[in-house]
Amino acid sequence: MKIVAAILIVVLIAVPASLLLLSGGTTLKIDPPVTAIGTATPVQVRVENPHGIRRLTAIIEQDGTRHTVTDVHEPAHRWMFWRSHESPQIRHFLAGKQQVPALHDGKARLIVEVESNDLRGRTDSVEAEVQIVSQPPRVSADGAQHYINQGGSELVVFTPTGYVTDSGVRVGKYEFRSFPLPSHPGERFSLFAYPWDLPADVTPVVFARNPAGAEATARFWFKVFPKKFRVRDFPIDDALMDRLVNQIEPGGSGDLLTRFLKINGEMRRQNNKTLADLRLKTADHFLWSGPFLPLVNATVESAFADKRSYIYKGKKVDEQVHLGFDLARTQHVPVPAANDGRVVWADNLGIYGNCVVVDHGYGLQSIYGHLSEFAVKAGDMVKKGQSLGKSGSTGLAGGDHLHFSMQIDGVQVNPIEWWDQHWIKDRILSKVNAQ
Image (cartoon, rainbow, N blue to C red):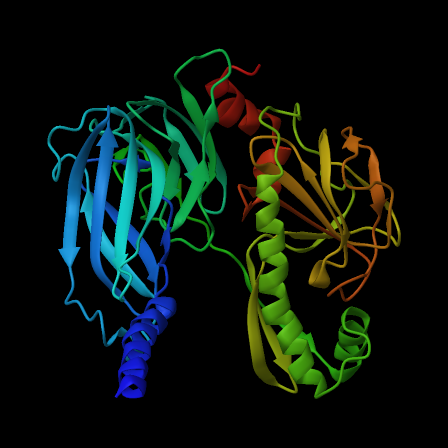
């Protein structure tokens, strides 16, 4: 009997002890991060505990007082938890003055606590410093007239008020940043594009928003001039594809046409994304002055937003839009910088071959493709007319030429406007008092 009693005692001690050891904590993450809370801000918390949780509580602490936002209880399974294995969960709730009227504008802490659904019932938490924002943002746009070419550029000045952390111009699916207007405290401006792929009836708006999820918009006077972009057939044959594909992707294998189509489509999209991402490498002031320089005495082989139908053996096999100008003169001619700026890219870029990108400030950048050689490197400051390299046929180029384009905040635009001194004065400089 003594032995049986001893075994029973051991079991009674060992089993709870084992279950206790199997109990664990919970991993919590507020994702996406929350930095501001408004009237009713959505909060999303990622919860990871293989045994699940039996309680989740969200609290906003302000001025030493804790206010409960949500308190959710789940059925407890203290002794059977070891049989469960729950996947990570996403929990949602709303937090703000609607849930806690006593909150006031200012700093606070958002605290999320969970209790594990196991024998230990351990409490874990995650916290975030937040700003309580009850007043919505407001914005008003300038009273200027904005004449905009489809595929072209424009600039608008506006005044945001209230708690605003993000503002700019939205044109359809595209958004363009804003910057402080020099010598005008409280005012901002946005250099934006009216993208070539949007219909001419899209209304651009100024926006101002904060992390609490509140947004204000304002319209401004504008008139869009629709443009008819060219549609052209682009014949390709085995000899051309062999030269282009094996220059861009040497050592590749597979069907020649399939490889060409992948380069012309998938690689083109990747390269354009790389170009668009360079918008983040821009100066917060103008680096340029006066009209931008074209490649003089050059023949225009392709224009901005030409829609190309690629014809192989009499059949259309692909369609792409050419975003820029193809300018040809003679072989290996020096390529001048269109204006003053800083080189943010000088390297090979797939279909663009040897490519240079110059930043001119406030998201405005010029692009030079298919170069045969470089005369600059990333980080160099360049002056208008300075040689960036020489024209060539690198990348997806049928012959020696310069591919020239410009982009605003990562969206490529028709550079013709930027070659026009009067357009720059009327549409850009007059609005920012930069002249």
